[in-house]
Length: 380
Image (cartoon, rainbow, N blue to C red; front, side, top):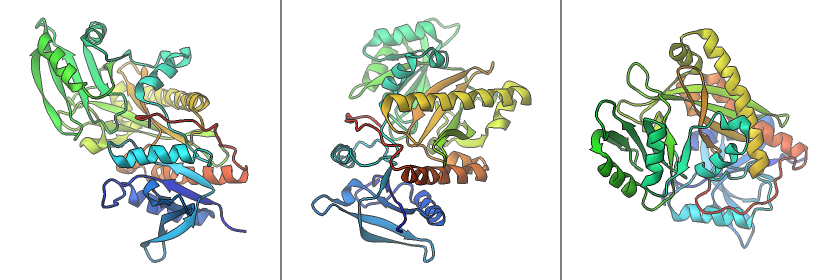
């Protein structure tokens, strides 16, 4: 009897066909072989639609080499494609639409604004959401600045901390605001003080060419002056059930408005960071327990709203009183935060769980299959 086949669907970073997470895929292919799961990697560019074949990327753990081989379509697809501003992403959208009848372990989520609206429909989650508006004009900025002294302007479909502005209303100086941010290239924009009129102009220019949200800022600066937050990973296990795989703290680079690792931040064990932030081990433990339940509830709810999912990362802000806010949800999470925090067991678990879940799906003949959904441009 042949092994079940899992295809990891991804995108090339550039026209030279370089893969962003190649070391991760190498480990997943190796672990898949140990579990009895045949795993290969492919992109929409590798699909020969006429022959219904895929020019797959294969890795051999014994030789340590990557090769190409024509393969039939896999039994299941694990979609790891993140948003790009490129023809490659448009090709992905066409692939998802053409082959929506195939068995995907995970379906796309909508953008940040739509996910926020979905959460807002349930009282269970409303209490954990920062105030958020879709930016249409300066009036939306004014409304949020009246509600909160700190405001973030974010792309509705952005990833990796790109394209974010942080605005702070300065106390003691009426009508003056501190603005700093991070460009789409992740370049840090140093802080500068501006008038309200200048701020309106800056934000208007910043939001040209896309949808942006205006969000209440949660005070997250550590005594060092750096911002911090928490990345929680929830995944389905080998029995098809949601579990929290782990949670890690992220501390931003100096002068950064975000904590993202790709933007120069570093990872730290959540228990340690929370203990320092909240002042006691007991509070830290209780907060992690609350976050665990919240993450699993959120995953179940989003899956019921959008279709099959196998994992989600929730970016959490936890204020100094221990209240938890859901900042963002990422359906294509990286795992490096656990490796960088020194939590190798959780990192290994994060790699293996999608494979164990894929085997469970295969044995249960498509238990994860969702009603095919048409994806709109800009969704994740």
